[in-house]
Structure formats: C-alpha cells, structure tokens
Amino acid sequence: MNRISPAIQRARPSRLPDFIAVGPPRTATTWLYEVLKGHVGLPLEKKETDFFSKHYDKGIDWYADYFRHCPPAMKIAEVCATYFASPQAPERIARHLPECRIICTFRDPVSRAYSFYRLLRRNAWTKLSFEEAAAKHRETREQNRYGFHLARWQRQFSADHVLVGLLDDLEADAQAFVDRVTAFVGIDQIVIPPARAFERVHTVETAPPSRRLVRTARNITTWMNSRRMHRTARWLRKSALGRFVYEGGRPYEPLAPEVEARIRELYRPEVEEFEALIGRDLSAWKYGKGPVASERPGKQIQAINKIQLPGQLT
Image (cartoon, helix red, strand yellow):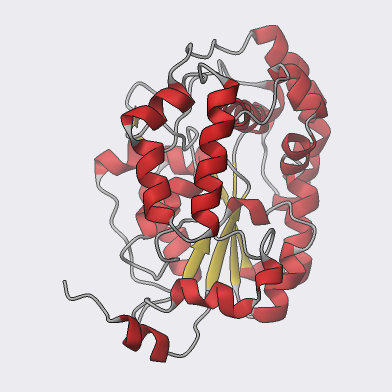
C-alpha cells in the first residue's frame, strides 16, 4: 500500500470524529476498536488520545492531527474509555462535534471492577485489596455509576444519538452486536469471523513482580507518548522485558464468593438505576451467575494478547 506523504497529509482539511465509543474501561472497547480497524478512520498509531478528558488544553488542532491521515471517504472515529465518567468530556465533545454519535458499552459491574482492579495493579496505581478498591477507589466507583453517566450523555446528545451496548449481548451474538454498531454509525456491515467473536484483548491475568519496576517503565512510556513516540512505546510494552515488568508475577486468584456477594450488594443501587434507564432486567448483575474472576468467562474464549478486553466489550 502506498504511504501518503506528510505534505499531502498537512494539506488536507482538518477532520474530526463522526462517532466516539466512550467506554467505560474494561467493557470491550479494545475489542470494538480492533473490529473497526480498516473500516473507519482511527487516530494515528494510538487507540485513545484522551483529548476531551486529559489534553483539552492542547487545542482542537492537536486533536485533529491524529486524523489527517484518514481517507476522505471513511467515517472518522475514536474509541476512548476515559471519556465516559469525565465531568467535562460530554460538553466538550458537543461543543466541537454537535452531531457526533456516542457508543457506551457496559459490563457486569463486579466483573468490570475486578478487571479494572487488575489493570490498576498491573500499572502500580493502587496497593489496596480488591474489596477496598471497589468501595474506596474513586475512579473504580465513578466508572460504575452507569445510570448517572449514561443519563448525562443522553442529555447532552439526545438518547437517539447514544447507543447502549452490553457485554452480555456481545457474548451471546457478536455479529448482531456489531451489526447494531455499524447501523448506528452508518457504515457497511462488518462480518465477524467466528474466532474473533470469542477472542479477548488486553487480558490481565498476572500481577507485576515489582511496583518500582512498573513505575519506572510507566514513566518512560508516558514520556514517549507525550512526544507522540507511540509506536516505540507500544514496542517497549510488548517486548519480553515489558511483559516481565508488567505481568511477571503471580496469577490473580478467583474472586471469593463472599467478596463478590458483598460487592454486588454495594453496587446494586447503581444497577437498579441503570436498569430503569435502559428498560432491561439485569438480575444477573445484581445477584450474580457464577465466578467473575476469570478474564475468560467461557471455555471457547481465548486471550490473544495478555492485556485485557474483559470477557466482553473493553
């Protein structure tokens, strides 16, 4: 394939996303990102720019640069889980992209919280136990306020411009799930091979051996990403050394049933609010349906890359 010269890329008018998948994290956003590749224009060399949540001060032209390479005939999109619970993201996106369509993906909140906890531990962002993090870690709690934040997105963009997708539906029928997405954003159908329907991306199954090593590696990759050295940062993360630093420790234990029960009770009011908003029975989210510890909920599900896409949408 011929590469587009930098001069031609600079000459192209600025383009911004037609739709954004906003998460929350660990709800199969990475899986959706991989499915959309090649069918829509995505940020250059980076899944999440975090522009509307963390880098808004850099200006809209900084954001638009991530899409200058995109073919003119393609819809433009971003998949960025940090936007979901951001206090500022909905209004900022609406300011620049008033017609933008929003995709919100959701997962059993206990399963999502445990998956996110593993990510926190992998990146040395917490030393709390899971039960403590589920109750006290602000980001973990805030991201599980499904009803509250979904209502904000619907108020900002109108309900018909916000698609709700459940991991349960993805696992039950991946093709139907993706068909809803493509119809919603107005692109041609994407046929999902059987193997892709069961693959999981970004699974986190083992803890890091040293928090100090993780913090050092994280500082290095943060510095690289701040200078848009995204390809080098990804190579470092996926190298044998990177895998050891982040994943070379002990496997995570299954979530104890009594812990699961207490956390389901903690999150039940949030689930009930979400149930009422979307008009679906989510009893399994409130009362459980079995172990949630495994990143691979079914025997058919295979991790393709030891860094997660929870058993559903990430």
